Length: 241
Image (cartoon, helix red, strand yellow):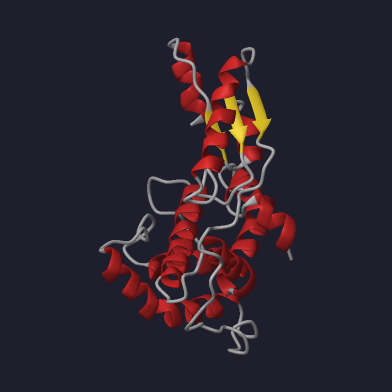
């Protein structure tokens, strides 16, 4: 969006954007941007809070009153908690004590995918769709690619960079976990699901390991991905091993 903003501004159209990853926006230097400290996918904070969302929107629009950018300002408030509350796992899938850590990240990841499959299938039936599939037809394709990357044996599909392949495979795995967890009873909030994913799963540990490999890589498509694109900054600050 930042790059598109530069193009539109050259055509005489003023632009302003919301940023969820501050470092990435700072690197692109868009004409006007408001960074918000909210979880990915929620640029206006928690759903159902029209007053809070209005404050975010007004802060964004106020950037048009500033002198010409590049301009990056921080929104001063955290998102309120979901109105429905965090909820709890009524039928929890417990990965603790399953031996997945002892058998390594790849084995743990595959085992978790298997345990979550019934909940994921339920989510697909309820919604009639899934966001899994940006890398391959099934999540197993993404898992196979990421485990081969962890083993140092991955080659990206033809026509895309290694960084794009890793990003798409990671997106598929996160979507699988989040959709499966959301299908469970208990009125789980997205923040509760996010907390569970990043703290309790082999998938999260795999993403941290992949991030380290990306940051250490000489591939120009992998290094910036590791720094900015795989783990939300708030998660990095709280949970980095």
